[in-house]
Length: 186
Image 1 (tube, rainbow, N blue to C red):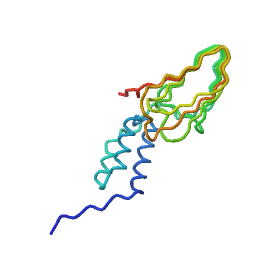
Image 2 (spheres, rainbow, N blue to C red):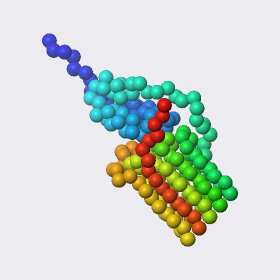
Image 3 (cartoon, one colour):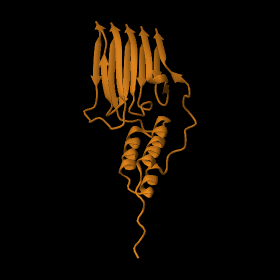
Image 4 (cartoon, rainbow, N blue to C red):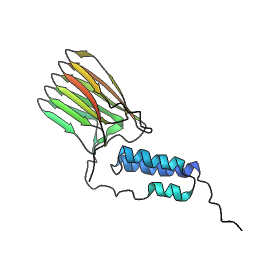
């Protein structure tokens, strides 16, 4: 007699584990890089044990962070910075800056293959958007007496990451989009 052959993993099981990993990434318990590696293992799994291994050792849900969602950011004669784990309502942020600086770090926010949109206006100010390496970015909008710069790392798009669409009107302003590796969390 031979050893029992394990039953093949079905796509429904794979989808359930992939959704679990996606939620963990959205909650900040996995970086985009960790998510990519684990979700790749999910789709490559041939046995239940391999599938379970892809979800093993997920960090506990963090206690800190913002549960409030953000859809509007207004900066007037001041500075606004959004870093770490924060939530975007309906995948859209409206950012308006007048005589100030706004920085939006999306590295812990981007979790799925959806589209996230940032729209708004920057007058006599700065808007900086930080995305993780390997994310697709589209930057558009009217620009007068302004600088508009995209400094993305020359890496291929990471599967499962969203597209970031930024449409900002800039007058006497600076609009900058840069990519950085994921933040190291401890």
